[in-house]
Image (tube, rainbow, N blue to C red; front, side, top):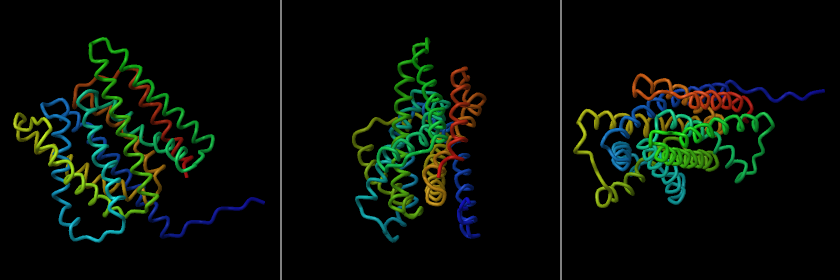
Length: 302
């Protein structure tokens, strides 16, 4: 006789629904993030400028809450989360956008995060995915590999720089996957996480940026700066960051990260009319493989 798993309470069902709704909103915001960030990467703005905009705006918004709010985790934990989900992720991803197309970011970052999450869970936490989950990861890995192969095969002189951008994207995915796993392990409140990441990143990064790093903000139109401030500082770093943290805590890091694999298709398609970046057959196949892997993995992940 089979033993049925206990049914969820109405409160658990409602929390689960809210978690998936939060993750769905993150998909929308991150799809736009890929487009807006690529626009910034193609402008005179440096990756360091983009990071300064992100942390400057979000850090100023959350600074009062950081000073006067309650703290439930140690300073060391807050610093690690800011280094991974703030500084590390942002610097790697903006460096990638200066070298590689938005479609690559959709696949390698948003498709790479669930893949990196599963690998880190396996290596560090001892999580052993089932056969279906392993198959979904294999499908996603094939999609990621296709993008790397396409970058190497570029014959317009951009192949080398694109591959470096792709490597930055994979590093960003690894940072964010580590960030998501630590959030669940330490059970940090979503609001405290968002406040801490934004403010600590600002306090650490901006002095270094103003003193030592190259800048090109003055050579860019004011409208471009305002658009980046709105999207990078308010939508991406603040609203999307808060929603992803909430989804991570309610539906778990595996399902929250696998939802992000819906971003590649939206980003790649939107990049055609908005950025004029054509999609090659390798990119299209990569989108299809990573998306299929995400669908399989979402239903298999616990």
